[in-house]
Length: 503
Image (cartoon, rainbow, N blue to C red; front, side, top):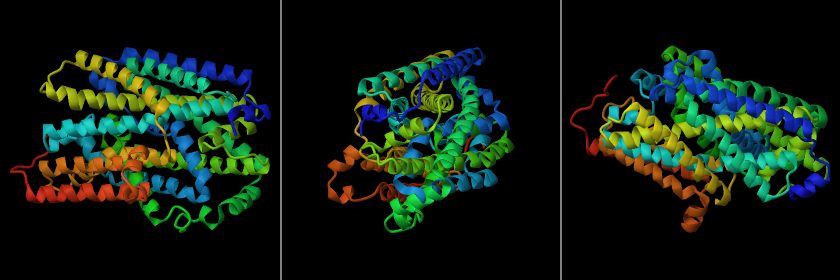
């Protein structure tokens, strides 16, 4: 079913009032982000907001950044395809984040070291060469990981408003990118913290309203009954042979750890916190957000299936379109504008965090080390802003032509694995095992590159032996490979002296 047909059926309530709400909200967010530029005096201000982040703002900006439009879209798609069994992803994410908050695993030692990026730790623990290689692969993986952000954001806007052409999709994607580039290049982390807080409040209210209206309109018992008829037992049991399976559940448990303790955009909040006690409190409270950011969109994706079935409508070929089409049909004018404004703010908050993250990694961990870390603050700020702009151009091109060919969440997980499988070995083991060596670190980072075999176009070219493996199986294999390479490399080629500088 195409979007024009969807609109002709009168299934979107998006009107003039909604456009006004969205315009006012976005204009306000951009203005606030622009005003934040006055607080940027040096690179530390730009990247970690001068390490002034307290508990309240820390929680809001952590959840706000991770609860982006891309998150809502892929979580809704996962709920649509997997039913209530997809809830296990949310439960594991929340539980693991809570455990990290209790124990301080990985994030507290990083905050004690006073680093701004994870590759900066690589140099303190191993060598400058490890930092440069790790930073380059981190940026590569991160930029690829956010490659579908624009596409998902454009798909949402086109679907919920009833726009009817690829041309509209491209225009929407371009406008959204320009807005984010504008205030991220100026205000850095200060812009992100302020806009994340606003977005966190608006989107939370919008999602709760959408959930309430969905249950009231469709009926709880009817949702359960339709889900049972549509998904069968696999839609309720994630371990079912016809559903996700045990390997996927294990993979999601690991992804829960990665998303809060190893992924650079989340770790930046720990690095920006005032002290280690604040870090732990941020993670404990953020566990609720890590749970909700999947759980609510999962449920709304299931509701979309029920709505399409009730109205005898064919499911869109691109299942990402179903969620925004459902919202456009079920939410009344005015409320719809509020929800869409929150979604767009979520899109912007995730983009700004990621743009700042990967640009600062390239500047601080790849370019600056080549000059013996002697580049002045003003030049590093200029380089970072230029890189933000270049990444934005790449994302616009990538989002327009890359054939997804898999669930958006699975693409996000496998593209991120290019970096985080090796990073987990260096952080999860290297922070606590004194014998971890520089050679082992190089091998672990390079081992993570094997995750590229899980990207759709590459996977198809590697033959049936690789093509038959699921993203979960490839991800778990890459994790094991990186850890084994770190251990073997460290035992066979130990360093003469091991000391974490600044610990």
